[in-house]
Length: 128
Image 1: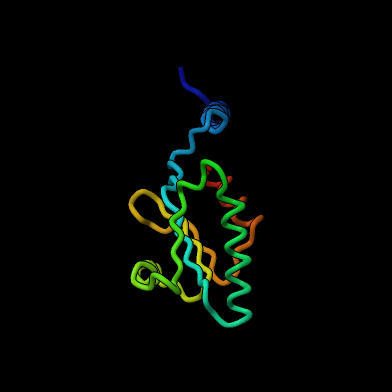
Image 2 (image 1 turned 90 degrees about the vertical axis):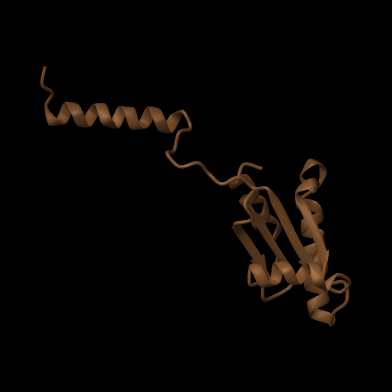
């Protein structure tokens, strides 16, 4: 039995809707594996204040079970550890918050200002 173009288009559209409603997207979303937060505990006034705001955002956004995701590095006291991430991900401004997948690929970053609502939205987008 031959189908007309319209019939075939309707069938394909229904199949597509079924796949979308079942959560199949064709490409699997990357999974958040680690969060690295680089801050400063010693800096001049406005930079220190910006890092302290970022510290509070990270502390609040990654409370409870999410705390295990975060690797916090204070550049003031652990320059060597921080430099690995700064060089690899070309970070330019503290505080820096980076989301990485299992292979260490960058999924998302925030530099200079870490906004609580933006971090929560990104976590939700990544299924955390």
